[in-house]
Picture 1 (cartoon, each protein chain N blue to C red):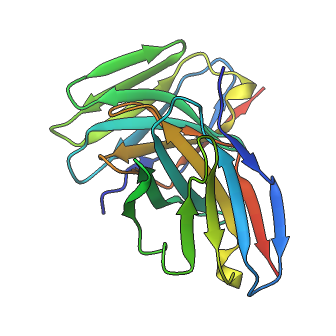
Picture 2 (picture 1 turned 180 degrees about the vertical axis):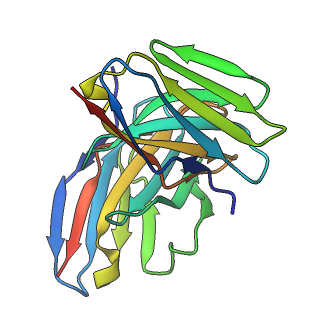
Length: 109
Length: 113
């Protein structure tokens, strides 16, 4: 499968804690993208990391990419209740995104 | 900030009927996509569209499906004869260029009765 696969499937943390989720993939990528989806809503783009990049930051988000291990991680620091959502990694080739099953993150107040 | 808009937000249709889902991509974007997400499952790629033609399509995108960009702003997905298993959330996405993120609409929930 060319899809990204996230781990863990679900994560429950206390507000203020960090949340880390991982993504593995099997084939080469142009880039890897992380998305957030609130229940019943659309996909919100978070970060795109290119195959020649190793780390990117956006606000409280940090994404790493290890192409030798074909894996990526998303770190959310100082989590808030509003971060409660499903998070997906998506492998990008020239024509499409291939999504994994996602990590459901619950941030407890 | 520009966004992808989709209409309707919810469509209920009898099995066997035709349905058209509509999308207005971000105005300067060149690449257009449809994805679907069956309840509780992964987001699945359906089709990509560039330069007025299909670039790639998945196995799901059979002869019952078609896409069109009838003018400079709209991008539509038509399902000719809907089946119960077509019930899903359908997402439209667009991007500006290579190695750029795809931006998604809020989706159309399609319910087939």
